[in-house]
Length: 157
Image (cartoon, rainbow, N blue to C red):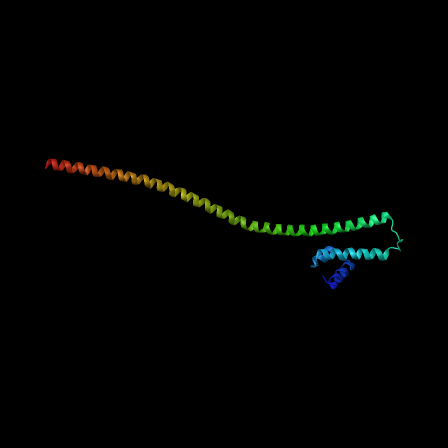
């Protein structure tokens, strides 16, 4: 990370832009938060009167707590950015689903029609099988009757 980038971030923050606005302009969140902390420390140091040689324990605790809170805020801002990205991705997926659902429903309708046609074909095949058996039985009976006719004709001749 170059000093020029950090200076540009510092200028933007000092100019009144929030860390979220600066990040939205393409700067890395950790760098923005680091510069923001440095800027606050610099501003607090410039405004504070000369500190005693030994800071009081309360002041040291307060500074430590401020630093912890700043780090927590930076972490929370990063979490919010991450959640916003996840929400955007989720919305895009929802849009894709809305496009695909009618197509899926159409395909399911086609599957239902194909199953019905298959069931009809199975029924027709079964009926044809029964008809073929009946035709075979009738052929056999015709053959028997023809034999009987030939036998009767030869006995009368």
